[in-house]
Amino acid sequence: MAAAWVIGSSAWVPQACAAEAPEAVLTDEHMTVRVEANHHLLLPQDWPIQQKDGQLGPVPVEAYLSMKFGQVRGKFEAGEGRVAALEERVRMLEAERQTIIIRVKTLEEQVAQRQGVTDGHQAQDR
Image (tube, rainbow, N blue to C red; front, top):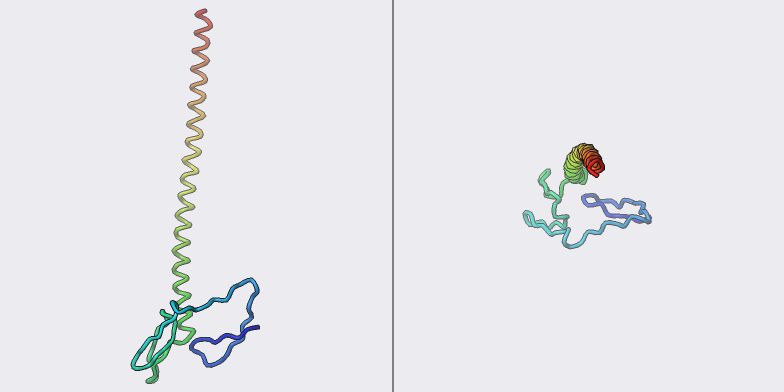
């Protein structure tokens, strides 16, 4: 079992690490030192800062996670919308395909009938 420092908290929180799931690593490109009112804060780039009770600091973890889950929910809902549109398009194409199959069969039957008539006329001419 590994322990992880939770940003915005002053306690170590034990975490069970799954063997198959790699741990997320924050690199320098994800972190930034932000200077607000002479305070240097090392935070992820998208972590909001707030002033509360005269102190400047990052918003609570719950608020940050709520914001992140809201972003994920928005992306998920957009993806669901795209999937629904694609499923509708597939249904339309399947219906069009069935119509084309019926039309091709009809044309093949017409060609076969004409060839039969033509072959019959040629046999009578001989």
